[in-house]
Every structure is written in structure tokens, then in C-alpha cells.
Image 1 (cartoon, rainbow, N blue to C red):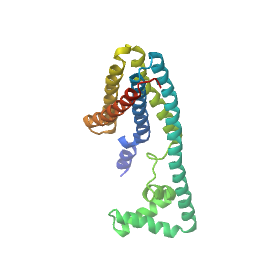
Image 2: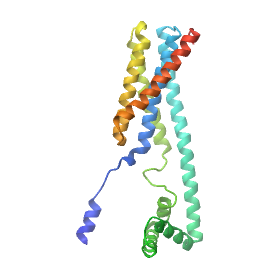
Image 3: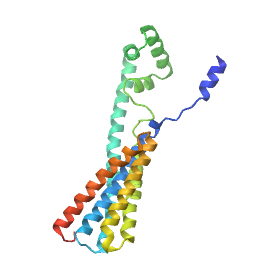
Length: 237
């Protein structure tokens, strides 16, 4: 038994779900940075704007987009955190006012997961003695450390990844000749999107091919739409 306990204490695993919070925000930010900036550049370029106007528009889009992503992600995730904290406060009050009922509730959860009633009660009692609120947060409310809302982390990850993503089509805009600007930005942005989708899928443990395809498809659709609008109006915005 001592050797078993020693082995249990030393055994650690790293699961992909541990990275889901920052990965989602980072991928979303980078994807939006590439798609929105490339689409903005292509749309304005299609309206026959000058190189300087196109580049300035792209830079403005980078700054505005990064701030918008940060603010939106912060508010969204903070709302989730507020909900989680409200649920935890309510659960804490219930544990103080009627611990017996909460113990029965926890026991019924474990019975529902396949334990017999006696073992479920024993597990519930031991987990309650160790950390009652933690047990109810995890098993009743579905709140765990891996998935807990982290507003600041999500906001910073989104803003930084958006800026990095937006910088890629902007670099192409600054370097490409005017007569090849639309083609260069569109083609290389699709390459960037495919690479992003593949890396995100690889990190998340999903299929690389489908991950690359889905972001590339939507990116191509966005750029084609803005190019059509720019060509339709045929005037600098």
C-alpha cells in the first residue's frame, strides 16, 4: 500500500483539455486577425485605393480589432466567471444551511454515475470531509480549475493573437506590388489560415486536414465578399 500511494502521488498526466481556455482565445484571435485584416485590405484595394490608404486602413483595423477582441473576450468570459461565482456562493450557502441534503444530493450524483448506494455514500462522505464545496463545484455544477473562466488571460490572449494574425497580411500589403496586391494578400492569407487551422487542430488533438480546411474556406469566403463589395463601389473608402 505505501508503494502504491507513492506511485499515485508521483503519477501526473497532461491532458489537452487543460489548454482549452487559452487555446480557444488564441486561435479565435489569430483567425480573426488574419481574416478581418486581409478582407479589409482586399476590399479597399479592390476599390482602387492607393497603397498608402490600403496600408493605413489595415493598420487601423489591427489596432481596432485587437482592442475589440480584448474587450469582447473580457466581458464575455467575465460574465461566465460571474455566473460561476454566483453558483458557488449559492452552493456554499446551501452547504451551511442543510449539509445533510447536500450530502444526499452528492450521493445521488455518484449513484447516477454507476456506483452502488453504499459506495456512493462513502465516496460522498469522504469528499465532503475533504472539500465539500470543491466536490459540489466539480460534480454538481461542472466547474473545475481546467475550465474555470479567466477573463484577463482570455482578453490578453485574444488581443495578442489578433495582432499577430493581423500583422501577417499587413506585412504582405507593405511588400507586395500594387498590381499584385489583391492576389498576394489573398493567397498568402489563405496559406496563413491553413497553417493556423492545422496547428490548432494538432494542439487540440483533432484532424489536421479538416482543421486547415474549415478556417481556409471561411477566410476565402470573407475575402471574396469584401472584394466584391469594393469592386462594386469602385471608390476608395
